[in-house]
Amino acid sequence: MQVFSGCRKVWRSVATLGGRLKRAESGTTAIEFAMVVGPFVALLFAIIEISLVYFAEFSIDNGVHKAARLIRLGEAQTANMAGPDFRKAVCKDIPSFMGCESNVIIDVRSFDTFAEAAAGLPKPLNGDGTLSNNFAQYTPGGPAKVVVVSLFYDWKLMAKFPGLGDFTGKVGLSMGNMPDGSRLIYASTAFRTETYK
Image (tube, rainbow, N blue to C red; front, top):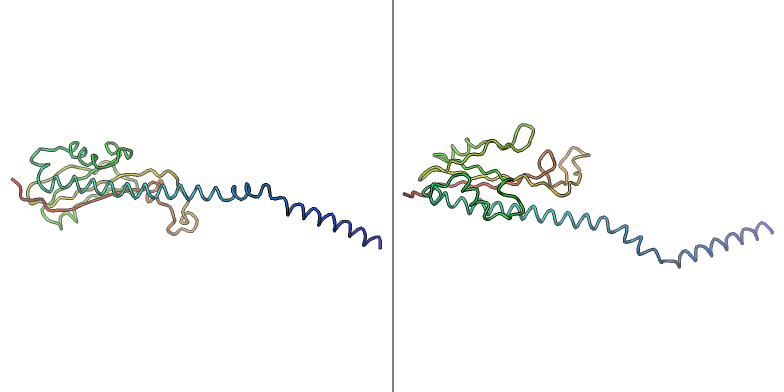
C-alpha cells in the first residue's frame, strides 16, 4: 500500500503542476508573437520589393516609349540631339531614386528593314551573364528608317532570398535573374521613323 500512496503523491504533484502551467498564460502572447513576427516581416519586405521591381519596370518602359517618340517623329534628329541629350529625355520620366543618369544603359540603333534590326541587335550580356557596358550606341537614323531603342537597368535587390534552385538545380523563387542575384530590367521598342524633313 505504501507504494501506491507514494505514486498517488507523485501523481497529485504532477497534476497540480500541470494545472498551474495550464492556467499560467502570461507569456503565451509574447511567444506567439515571436513565432509570427519573423515570417510576417519577411513577407512584408518581399511584397515591398516586388512592388518596387514592377514599378521600376513600368517606369522604364514608359520612359523608353516617351523618349522614342522624339526619334520616331524626327524631333531628336532635327534638333541634333546627342546621346547625353537623349539620356536626359529618357531619365525625365524615370524616378530619381533609380539613378537613371548613371545606372541605365541606353542603346539606339537604326536599320533599313525590320529583318536587319532583328539580326543586327547586340548581345547585352557578357559570356558570364553579367551586363556589358560597352555595347551601347546612339544612332537614331534618318527619315523612314527602322529604329530600335533599348534600355537596360541592373536593379540591386534589397533582399536576396535563396531560391529553390539553389538546392534542387531547378528554377528558384528568387527575383534575381543575374549571376550576382540582381535583376536585369529592360525595355525595348522598334518602329519606323516618320518621313520628316
